[in-house]
Image (cartoon, rainbow, N blue to C red; front, top):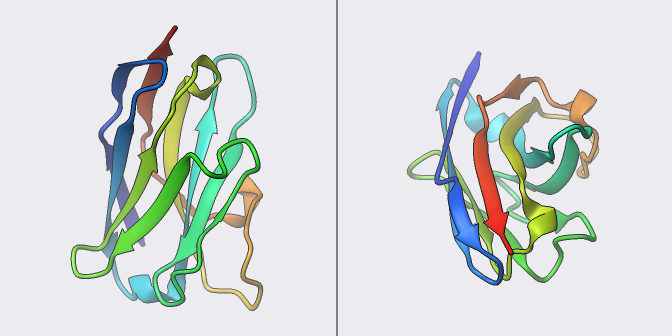
Length: 126
């Protein structure tokens, strides 16, 4: 069992930055891959960024590449999402997710993840 708690959301002006945190707890966390997803109002939940605790090689959705950075602090069991140059299209509820180890590296589908946080709201005002 893995528990995930997100924090750091809020209201920010267009062009601004926010950093989201996801505190993870549970056994054998290093065997999980981690991801951030977001769900705008009335839309589906979409992949944003992914990483593993061990390899640390991040990957991103095209819509955020170059603006967002996912990282891990293994000592704190925390995953971060640094979001820069925010625009109104980034407004959404952001979710942290964890999936059990698999032989593939990239995991962009929500169905590939087993545990989810409660979500944190990010609102970008124009």
